[in-house]
Image 1 (cartoon, rainbow, N blue to C red):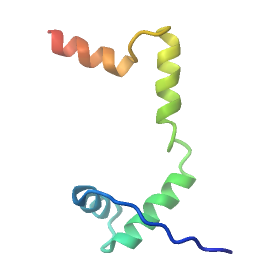
Image 2: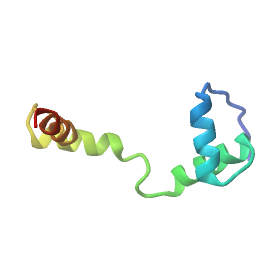
Image 3: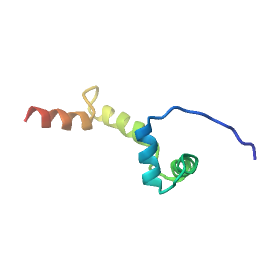
Length: 75
Protein backbone atom coordinates (compact mmCIF):
# COMPACT_ATOMS: atom_id res chain seq x y z
CA UNK A 1 0.00 0.00 0.00
CA UNK A 2 1.31 3.42 -0.94
CA UNK A 3 0.66 6.50 1.14
CA UNK A 4 0.15 10.02 -0.13
CA UNK A 5 0.68 13.07 2.07
CA UNK A 6 -1.77 15.87 1.29
CA UNK A 7 -2.45 19.33 2.65
CA UNK A 8 -5.47 21.58 2.54
CA UNK A 9 -6.58 24.83 4.12
CA UNK A 10 -9.75 24.64 6.24
CA UNK A 11 -11.39 27.31 8.38
CA UNK A 12 -10.91 26.84 12.13
CA UNK A 13 -14.70 26.54 12.56
CA UNK A 14 -14.76 23.59 10.16
CA UNK A 15 -11.97 21.86 12.07
CA UNK A 16 -13.76 22.35 15.40
CA UNK A 17 -17.06 21.07 14.01
CA UNK A 18 -15.36 18.08 12.38
CA UNK A 19 -13.69 17.13 15.66
CA UNK A 20 -16.98 17.47 17.56
CA UNK A 21 -18.99 15.42 15.07
CA UNK A 22 -16.37 12.69 14.72
CA UNK A 23 -15.68 12.51 18.44
CA UNK A 24 -11.95 12.60 17.80
CA UNK A 25 -9.50 14.79 19.70
CA UNK A 26 -6.96 15.34 16.92
CA UNK A 27 -7.41 16.89 13.50
CA UNK A 28 -5.59 13.97 11.87
CA UNK A 29 -7.95 11.37 13.33
CA UNK A 30 -11.05 13.47 12.66
CA UNK A 31 -10.07 13.93 9.00
CA UNK A 32 -9.23 10.24 8.65
CA UNK A 33 -12.61 9.24 10.09
CA UNK A 34 -14.44 11.71 7.81
CA UNK A 35 -12.63 10.47 4.70
CA UNK A 36 -13.33 6.81 5.51
CA UNK A 37 -17.00 7.66 6.10
CA UNK A 38 -17.18 9.54 2.80
CA UNK A 39 -15.67 6.62 0.91
CA UNK A 40 -17.89 3.97 2.54
CA UNK A 41 -21.22 5.82 2.86
CA UNK A 42 -23.55 5.16 -0.09
CA UNK A 43 -25.18 8.60 0.28
CA UNK A 44 -21.97 10.63 0.49
CA UNK A 45 -21.05 12.61 -2.58
CA UNK A 46 -24.50 12.50 -4.18
CA UNK A 47 -25.22 16.18 -3.63
CA UNK A 48 -24.12 17.25 -7.10
CA UNK A 49 -26.11 14.46 -8.74
CA UNK A 50 -29.24 15.47 -6.78
CA UNK A 51 -28.85 19.09 -7.85
CA UNK A 52 -28.40 18.10 -11.49
CA UNK A 53 -31.50 15.86 -11.36
CA UNK A 54 -33.46 18.73 -9.82
CA UNK A 55 -32.37 21.06 -12.60
CA UNK A 56 -33.39 18.53 -15.26
CA UNK A 57 -36.88 18.20 -13.73
CA UNK A 58 -37.38 21.94 -13.97
CA UNK A 59 -35.92 22.23 -17.46
CA UNK A 60 -33.66 25.18 -16.77
CA UNK A 61 -35.63 26.71 -13.92
CA UNK A 62 -34.26 27.01 -10.40
CA UNK A 63 -33.41 23.84 -8.45
CA UNK A 64 -36.05 22.74 -5.90
CA UNK A 65 -34.05 23.88 -2.89
CA UNK A 66 -33.73 27.39 -4.34
CA UNK A 67 -37.43 27.55 -5.22
CA UNK A 68 -38.35 26.66 -1.62
CA UNK A 69 -36.03 29.34 -0.25
CA UNK A 70 -37.37 31.91 -2.70
CA UNK A 71 -41.00 31.09 -1.80
CA UNK A 72 -40.23 31.50 1.91
CA UNK A 73 -38.58 34.87 1.30
CA UNK A 74 -41.55 36.12 -0.75
CA UNK A 75 -44.02 35.27 2.05
